[in-house]
Amino acid sequence: MERILIIEDDKIICSELKTLLKNSEYEPLILNDFKNALKEIDKINPDLILLDINIPYINGELLLKQIRIKSNIPVIMVTSRDSETDEVLSISYGADDYITKPYNPNILLLRIGAVLKRVNNYQEITKYKDLKINIQKGIISNDEKEIILTKNEMIIFSYLLNHQNKIVTRDELMTDLWNNNEYINDNALTVNISRLRAKFKEIGYEYAIQTRKGIGYILV
Image (tube, rainbow, N blue to C red; front, top):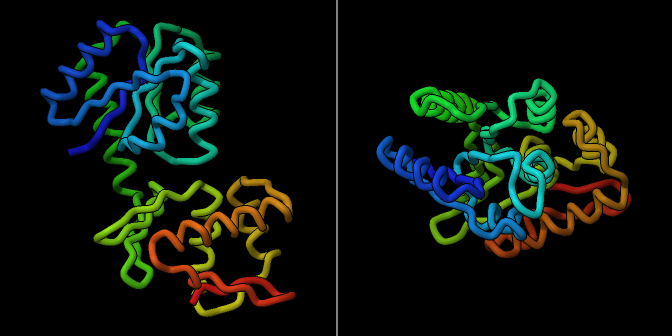
């Protein structure tokens, strides 16, 4: 059952959406802590987000932009604004779809279904040793534990995995990040590698990524 997070400050609309989604065999969740929205999203890790533009503490489009730095979770913007500018901004920031209020519930359900189907069709599942790698969601898991990678961490790990047991230079990793429109400098690459290693240590693979001094890294 897919988990859908509702980010909307209107309690009546939240209640209506919750009922609609539940009756359609989704698991609806409601975000209550708008001040720490990004942290709450990380904790919940939903399959899809319904995001209103006008929410407390942070503009929905800005929140979407922050989500996209760390995650590819599908997002549908739900708003009362009927403006081409808002639609263009939302899509440019990474929204998967956009619907304005008042909306037809059946149309909303069709759009949710279409986005989830599209994501699932492109969702890449692969393996590293006994770990399952969900590239689309940035999740690495085994039977006991799960770790969540940022977008940059997943790009780096995917490149290392595609070249497993071969030395990968820092320049190669930087180029791959740039090819994915992630423009980071040399210091940022070092930070990302350190964080990636720390996360793999949590799941029992402390020495998975090894350094080859003066050359680069190798995934063993």
